[in-house]
Image (cartoon, rainbow, N blue to C red):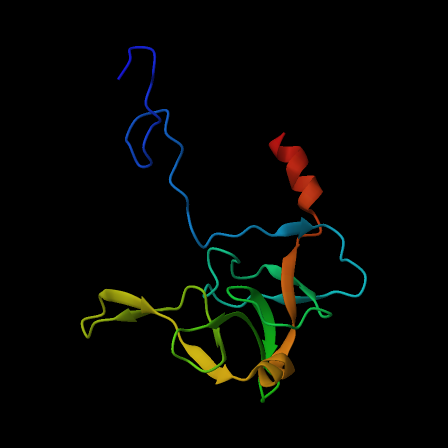
Length: 154
């Protein structure tokens, strides 16, 4: 190689000039300090959708968007009337859409030590049946005093 040619750094090389490796599966949401007209909110219960949403955060839901999309988060209403924020996906070999949690629950060994996370899925559903359960797509997080917190940071 000529002396004036510098090789392009390969991904994952451990020097200070390499960008961090991509982090697949991460998403970002718009933080709303005012609710958009016609949208609704839903409080996230538990940490099953971490790191996308934390317990106690309020999801902003677009009720006009009820068509499932691979890996997107939706507010789902179950037959008993309860609602949950779930991810929609197609799993290879399954004949339809399933609803799943992002993070799942920690399974423990008999001695109580953590073993592994497992997530549950509900389905598969044909498209029309999945859309009947979907209330709307999660498009953001409602945080009414968001701008006030920014003033403290800057």
